Image 1 (tube, rainbow, N blue to C red):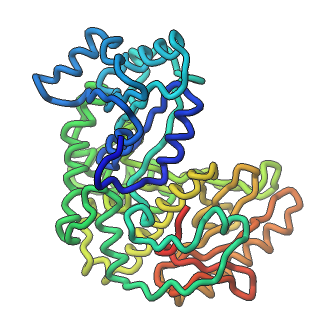
Image 2 (cartoon, rainbow, N blue to C red):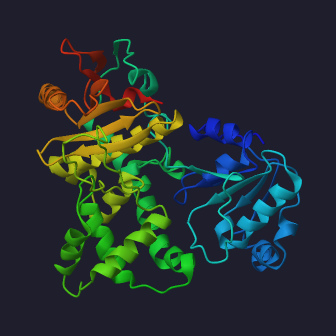
Length: 425
């Protein structure tokens, strides 16, 4: 289907590719990130399980007879399939019975527990993770620099123009939600807050029918916001919550709530990276904490443009989150993965893009152009120290991803400098 006004997404190519290989594709991701809109552009018929029309008739029909809602021209969209988990097995069975590729597209904003799902769907149903819009997808990056080419050492120097710091702050607060595009910054800032309210007040219960303490969930979410782009442990989060009056919480509850946030795609942590499986360097295994979009952290911190401009440390963490959201979207489009590096020698790399063939690229993320020299020196120093270990693999590319840089270029020392507002997949 062709949708008037549809803004193409990077994941579109993956959806088409997977439909040509698998019987079904399941597009997963946070609410309001554009899954249904994208899926509807790739389908020929659809059923919306969450449609409240006629007292949720579609959901009741799917519960009574899943096979009936599968009837329709292929690819057939089953939107919010997790509302009726038995649909998963019905789709798998239908694919086995009729063969053929690209039969169904499923979308889901939550990962249900395995109750009611008998088969993994391996080989029949492929999963794709969709995220809020990157700056390139929302039209806020010129796209003059390709990440895939950069990771192969290719970059044509280009003047990208001055970047306004206030504009960067607005992009962080607005986030990558399609529904916020074109809204004034102060109005766009309302959506992330309402997103969190909907999650806490409704979606958390609907995942598995368990009632949870919304007060403690909000405290934990605020703690996550204060630790955005950091490797805070569960114990740190627990102490943070306990520091609030009436905020007593135990380790088991913290772990359970974090699992629910992950299953609802509220959080999107960045895993650790090791430069060599046999390396003698001890690598920390903590994940870097992230929300699925930095705007959620802003909403929880009640951050405003003025407030962030007066708190550059917090702004730096949120800018890092913005860059890493985009790096992950771009990297996954060509089969790469996003990680971070931290070892017991106090060496850190903000972002690591690992390519399918095992090569990897190191990125330091800095808001101001005045930080480029120090960031480049730090990358080169880490590379030299890694070279002392013969078992590890050195990065193929070193890059400073910057907010306020006015050009993309390669420095005489070999380190690339790229503005995030010029990057694309």
